[in-house]
Length: 442
Image (cartoon, rainbow, N blue to C red; front, side, top):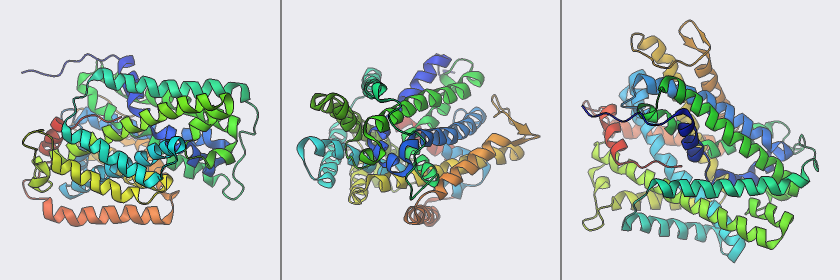
């Protein structure tokens, strides 16, 4: 029997994780986050990192229980039931729709700073253009993904070095007077968007040397490395511009560079940000369309969604549906609102995953766990419990309209489950189909 090769070392998996985590989120949300948390934006990244780390450990334990199935779809069915598994799958399907809209608005903000174009129309145009590329056919390769990550990281390092001469120029504990410390938690909920993707690392356990040690440690280490970069970028940005000016910018990191070095630096960082955001939107659309295609092939969505184009051999129906749905969210116009719509769906998923890790400690006692989260009281995993609580706390920091949206998505998923959850529903089988056709997103 042919199995996956255990080729990745701890540090290789860690670097892959950093590449997955670092994306366009920091480029597009630093201004919005500063508006909520003031000069303490650095602390907001730590708050989000703690939540991500706790949840990442739950993912690692669950992946060690079900390494071949290895995804939220399966974890939830094993812990609870088919209906909740479908709802989690539904939330994961909605997430790329909204996140593509959020990042395209970020792209439009930087593009508008160059060419003074309408942000919403620019974002829609970017979605249409990138969707056409997906329809026409795209063949990703590892070197392209690595180059994208390197360019994005270089942009962040440039901002850090530009900010060093300004370090100490502001009070790093200054908060917006009308929000206070609650703003730090609200910003933590917002910038959680910049950490989405760490959960993919747990599903690579079969290809990692000594996964019991390497996977959980690599998850935490990759989050720490990303957080250090995020904190330094946050400190550099408010040092150069101050949180008030930063919060008003549609191209925040480009303006930080402009204040420090002039218009040429603005052009350089703006170009990097355009590249980062366009690439991220493309990969989100790619992953989302393949997920829809896989779910249709697994009879969880209507079969027409899994239809391939006769010439291009791409899932054109899924691509069009994803495009149209993303455009709806783009019309909201506010990137902070759209990003938090993404966050409420993914944090709800992570809440259930943490609870699943707890339930399975008691429900599947005999199953062998190659990794268990540390700090336990008997069978009870304390860190998984803290992960669930922290996800719930971040969710509560969001505006009422965002919470209503999240509740509506869950209710709609529950209604749809009566249409698609059948007696022969097998989450593991469907997940294998999805995984076969899903490309990794960063």
